[in-house]
Image (cartoon, rainbow, N blue to C red; front, side, top):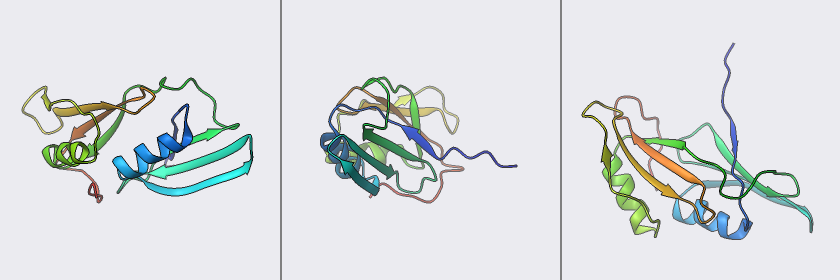
Length: 132
């Protein structure tokens, strides 16, 4: 039996600001943005090439904004990914090379609420998507 990770909840304080960051700056695809009433809204976004999405919302999603730490994206070209993030106005750190093995290099950034993300370079198994 497969156990697939499909959704990660990202707690944010401002849904429109978060949508802009994740969709426009990171290039995540907006799968849906649904408002049920003035107190209930939910958004799902998916990174390019990923089978796992993120969900943010009001009235449904629980969690303290900025509490998400250590979620990791994987790319095949870390220098290209970093350049694209910088071009889109994301404050991202320098490349950290923990070792010379494939998978040993990272960059780190935070969203506007302080949720922390890592991007790891794995050339041997990165799947499909490019940062567009």
